[in-house]
Image 1 (cartoon, rainbow, N blue to C red):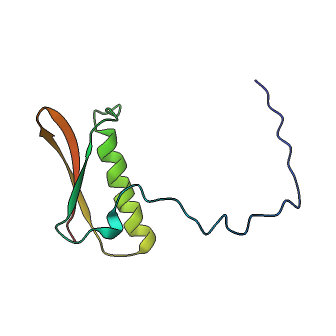
Image 2: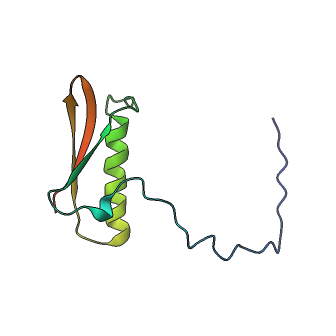
Length: 93
């Protein structure tokens, strides 16, 4: 499949495109130290056997703190409730 891509000039950038941001997937901004939330571990495993959901949540927490240059820190753990695996993330600092 060979798709032709046409480069265009002078197409105005929408005024509100950069201001919306994207909706937060996880409630990190609302969490105080000691708060936690859990999500189903439903994304499977990586090639190294790690939980994809845990990896996704950990990266999101780290990136959120780095972007804001704040001192918030988070920790994750896999827990099983009634045979179902969940990833829980705590705000620890």
